[in-house]
Image (tube, rainbow, N blue to C red; front, side):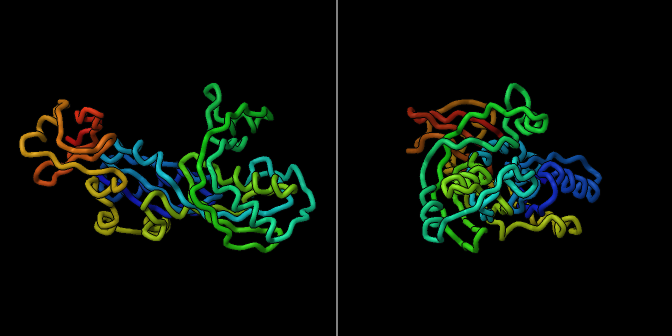
Length: 293
């Protein structure tokens, strides 16, 4: 079983717990050990698309982690929690004197590139410790801002004190921080009530199977859900090697290629067999990065 699996995560579990549930179910059906990884966590309270890598595909997990993502989030104005979400303790309350047009204008102003601070309760590492581990001990984490980009932001609904938004953003964007930032500009604070990841690059949550449904599937049905390796990296440009060059690639050799492409590519043999991932430099030299054997 080599490929990727699209799972719709429910609220109330961690991403790692989801991975373990999927792993145990597959192993119970096959009586074999299987490697499974995930390509980006979702918060405990959040729902939506998770991309799991299975078998040989776990070697390609890193290529999924920097992909752009889309979320639908609901925020509540007038309150701030210590976690910036519904799980946290309310640490500030303030009356919100803002009208719908003003709020819309604030929300739409976030279509930009800027430096964003992660929430104090996040998985960011600080001197070997997770930020949330420090925050739980009452220590304010020394978090550094990271450049992120909001490509598109839409107002889906406003029903004071609640507002709902759809956000298409770069990897590393914290929607919890974005909702709080909207509240800050509204001069009354805000926290995230609900969060759903709806898209990762071209992968859609509509094509994912809810975890509860997956856990009652038989082995044959599960095999049908797995996207094979050769189709699992649609976001990378593809090259096809001439006959005889596939052996050079899988043995780790570098060689010149006739393609006007620079950077990371997925590599196929002349008979359309997926060989792995390579990198082409500005002199058109292909270097094998990850090889399927």
